[in-house]
Length: 424
Image 1 (tube, helix red, strand yellow):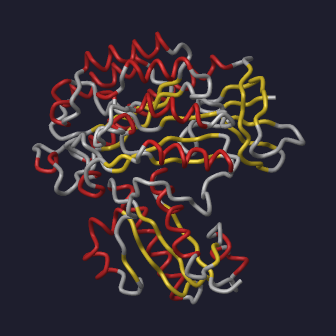
Image 2 (cartoon, one colour; image 1 turned 45 degrees about the horizontal axis):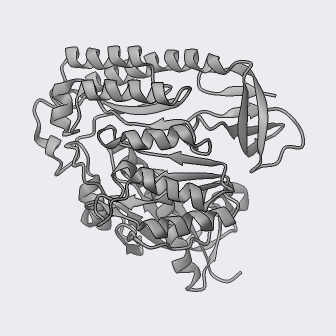
């Protein structure tokens, strides 16, 4: 096999995409890619040695930083035991804390910052996700400048991939047999605002739909309510191949907190947008995310958020405890909320959302859903409907022999769990 290498990709879909981009670089240097790090960290396979291990880190919030540091420490231990010969650490964490990391981990061989984003199509040798699931990053960086967010400090301002290059990449993924195309970016609803073009996300989607006839599902991941246009709603509503799944992080609902967050939108506009989406795209699933414990958030303002979440009933919801990120606008806001208060508010949101999700899931009972099979766990096949994004949402469990991973099957739902479904 010669020299071998592998990649540990941490964080979000966007990081996984970047990890796929760098694989050809090392393949061209004569390394053979090992698709799974389990090949050399499995305790029953102690003799396995890998020549180069790349860790692509995330440095977005405290929890992500902690995970990245934990993995770096584990990989350094593997090197001490002779299981890894060379370590390269790249990504967002390195961009922000390189000097500190170099002092803390002297046995790491090389430190590199973020993967350069190309506005042109670059073919990826390997897809780190399921073979039937592909990701297409259409933009990098962000122009929104939310006061809590370090992404612009790490990734810079918005850079959009050219429309013709996006379509080339979509067609390439179609040729490779991808069944689900996930359109990703920090804020895909801002796509094209930096280009000298009148095109927007809605027109880009029309181009992708026209160029790719064999991809059954196209999913939009990370949209901003400020930029969610009527034309985008129309494209989603009128095209069956676009998943009826809206990923719409609102972050908060109180107007004062929204202003401090620099979200560029009001409570009324969020409520109006939600009503418009649900009216024009009947049956769609909406995922959102919120931040609890933002600096100066009062108990009354938190309760306003909690009541809103109880009233609007998002189908999917992620909650995050505010992370005080250096050099962001919110870093110096006072008072900062005590950690115990933030944890208590987080718990209240998630307990309420569990009840909401469980209740909403029941609407699928005895309904027929199209399910994409992604894995097998003993005698149970694991898949997803169009209403769940990979890795972050629920699953559909099917108990039947002879199913093939990467294929679609019609399933009748016979049981509804809190977040998952069981079908036949």
